[in-house]
Image (tube, rainbow, N blue to C red; front, top):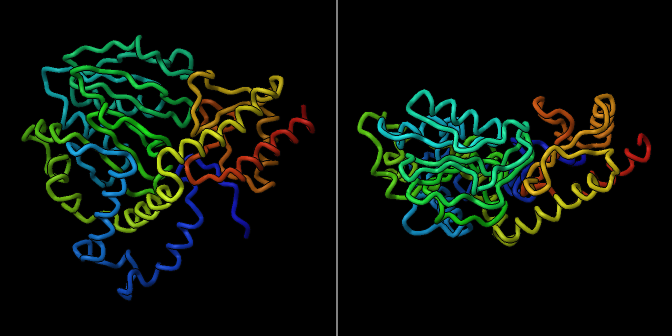
Length: 361
């Protein structure tokens, strides 16, 4: 079978050369006579992979010395309650900026654990835009300010991050981490499920300022404490070893292709192809996100009527494109352009979109 044009929202495309390398090592990693999935997580062979992945994240994102990089499990969904458990005292309020479904879910979990507020929201427009940083209600006494840097469902992305002063800034970067350079030093905690830009599902990357580790109350269970995992180099319990192995290989691939800057250039070029097609379709294709808030990761659009949406998706599937269905809350179509999605796949989709409009417009 030829490789599909994979536009899935996550788990998402992986670099083909990384997959080929993994296949070569699948039954015999590093001359051990075992798969990496069979190695003890206490073995020197696995620990070398583990430490190399942590070092790769630090290098590619220019992580300052006063931060820890953790490799945990549970996805972003576990981080939603874990953050307030560790960093929301009874006498403070957590500030959530709502830009889509995932920020809503993060807020829902925090409400179970303490006081919260909504510093800004674009929900009234069905999340078509990112709020202006000047309009966010931030108080120096906020326990933290939480944002979601990219919104997969609605196709919006933060292009300028808020300056929160004394309040720690926390971001869910699950869908755009390492797709571009980011100022890590502006954040107190970043978290990201790997399954969109960094590897397969199963491992979650946490980048946390060391001073935050001192704030956890004694009542938080051991495995849900960030300091537990920092103290044990993310080896307190058995890590997702194969996911970490794949993460390490994807990080090497990113480095070979220009690092974060290289990914930014690559992703902007891919996104521009599709946005150009949408903007020059005379209304045949309509983007969901306002132009200044558009995401380079998720291009969301609708056709003039629902029957055309269905026809487009069916014909696209027949032509070898997968993962183009939009989320039910937006409808229509969505092309996710994460790091491993090739320019060639985007060019093929652009050609398909132009031909579909000629046939049905």
